[in-house]
Amino acid sequence: EAAMVGTRKLVRLLDHAESAGAKVVLVGDPCQLPELAAGGAFAGLARRLGGPGLTENRRQAAAWERGALAHLRAGEAGRAVDTYLAHGRVHTADSEDDARAQLVADWWHARQAGEVAVMVAPRLREVDDLNRRARTYLKDSAVLSSDLVLGHRSFAMGDEVLALRNDYEVGILNGTTGRIELLDRLGRRLFLRNEDGRLLEVPFAYAEAGHLTHGYATTIHKAQGSTVARAFVLADDTMSREHIYTALSRGVRRTDL
Image 1: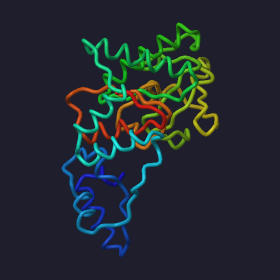
Image 2 (image 1 turned 180 degrees about the horizontal axis):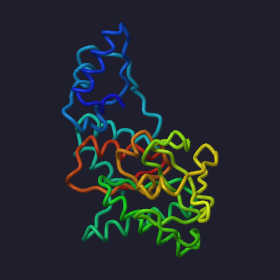
Image 3 (image 1 turned 60 degrees about the horizontal axis):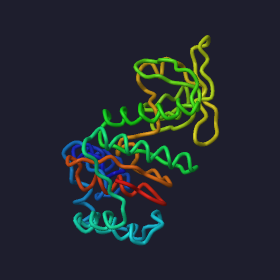
Image 4 (image 1 turned 60 degrees about the vertical axis):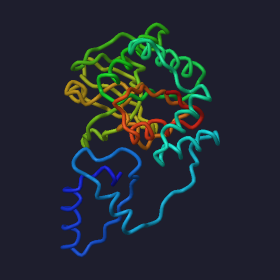
């Protein structure tokens, strides 16, 4: 994700590498999420220096969707949206609350059908709300056991969670996802089965510090780089083309906006 490195940080890195006689290889995509700080260096270097690149989309199964994403990537947002509309992938609601309710219901139906699905939203407050709504479905279906509050969030055995900070002693990294298999109240620890099948022992203090969240919905920044069967994207008029392009390109089989 070198395209997300701010220009000032990139200059310091390149200066340091030059003084050490080192070589820097930057790998990223200027059409996905931009730098948070003052940026443009990666895109500028790519234009001036060129370099190898990926040109064939192998993720999306449908040819029309690959075409629509190519239009969106090239800045032809109108053509891309028209294509998604024509294929019934854009859903509108009378209010933001109705849109969120519809999105979570559709996510739940996909999950019930056995599909790997994720909800994506632009901001943390929307992600937290979608996760709360998702857990209501899970509780009503007896997927989750009784809650235990750690910090400002409730967790239960069966919860799917996402780690937000590195902790090398525990062996958990920022972005780790998994399912809670046991909550040990006496030992003040939880046991988390990660995506690789390993069982991690995570102290309650990690979650109490706010470093563990639910993994049913995620921000676009956390979703970048992931691949799922189904993606459900909550959108509004504050999202840039780069944000929409990143969010809409996660799903293999189907993405709904």
